[in-house]
Length: 106
Image 1 (cartoon, helix red, strand yellow):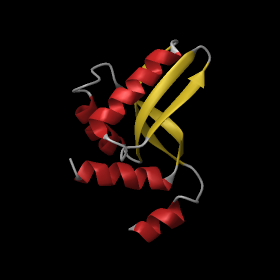
Image 2 (cartoon, helix red, strand yellow):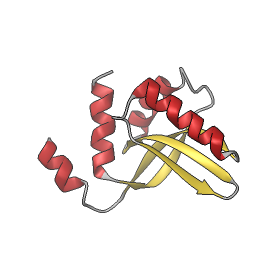
Image 3 (cartoon, one colour):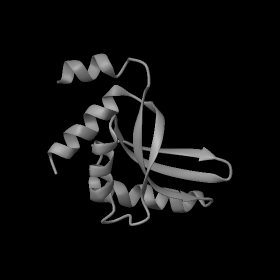
């Protein structure tokens, strides 16, 4: 699995889904949410933030299928009731493996 992770982490980006946790214009709120997420879910689950003026968006996970993404969304809604699925075009294969590994360990 580690070998596959190494090989796939250097390949092209994939399309899939992420769970958007928050969209805010306040960078400090984004940082606070990111810190809380890491405390709750650890470092294993991929987490990214993007800035699309004026919004800062925090997104978690990386899933190829909508079914996998909905499972992750259901799990994250416990702490983030406003979370929703979003399309993603910048997913690395390693992020998908990490998300799947984390889902198996829940």
